Image (cartoon, rainbow, N blue to C red; front, top):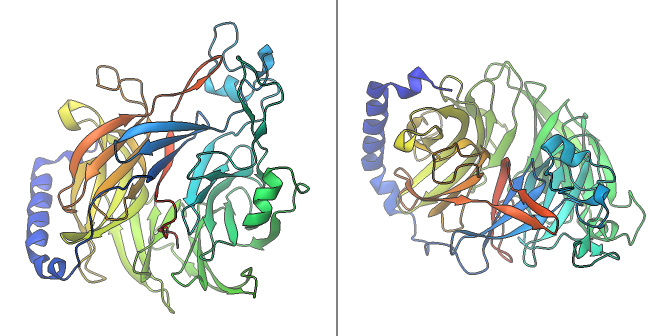
Length: 462
């Protein structure tokens, strides 16, 4: 779809001029920011959840090529037709794929988040109401077992059932000490709290089902996501059903496990009458949390300190439909990027593409504004994450590339050089390709969450 307002040449010129002024005005602040070694390192990984194919694409940021695809389907674990992905040379549609007889794999892989030490990450199956853990180094699903029927026409492993957590798990989040995973159950009015060590044992079938669940926390209806303050003593819970934010006080026992009590509830109806907030993220300095209010086409920024006051509300334009935000700060700028689900017709080389808003975070609270946009070089931009040096940016997309484009029919990830955060430079599209099963090729598609992981390093969630 197109937006006249977004495509107005005079408005674009004004935005570009404003960006240039901000860039010049922020020189002093940037000069005080210490230089950080640029770029990815060997062993870094970018993980993308592909909701329609129920796979995880793994990108090597050193080469910006797909390294591997992690299989969360259960196809081809048996050579008989009901277990196969391609049967009689026919590749199923998405609906048929997940409803094939005896399919026990994931359905609608969505949320994804690294542990505090970045050695494992958790991903949620919305349709299967469960949680999977993946080793970020070996790229193996934790708890998979050798396939007893393994052969030349079957897979080597049988997929674990993961951890059954509740209806419509949207986003998992690790506590700051890495002992627990909190999962927002969007189809319920509660969070599931999972013991990480028990979850690994349960995934492997070493303890009974249900052992990993420590408790449930009652919260507002339709919780979409939870994020912890820098010290882990406060949890912020947003909703996709209510114009509210639940704020919880969190304490930890000697073993590092949590107890909670409700601190307050923030009314967001003035900023978001629809009550549809799918994503939030804490700023790297721990001072603020930013949330997308998708149907209201805006972002709200709150103080993460004692009072949790509204600091900014940023209108993003008609039908912007913001998905995720990411913070980028280096020696040349301090910005927040917001991905748009809206697709505009006037993208690069005349092809449809989504926009990404640039917000200047060097301005004081109350004075932040959108200072520019750049095209995501894909359609329906969703997940977005930077490398630890804040010089390279990755963007996931929900929709495939159109015919007569370089990667037609492929779901792609876009890569940008953001060493100058106010002037992102497009590097390339990475086509995500296929999961090559013994019976045929399953195309990776509908990318949602994206996380950049450096195993062994402190993650952005901790």
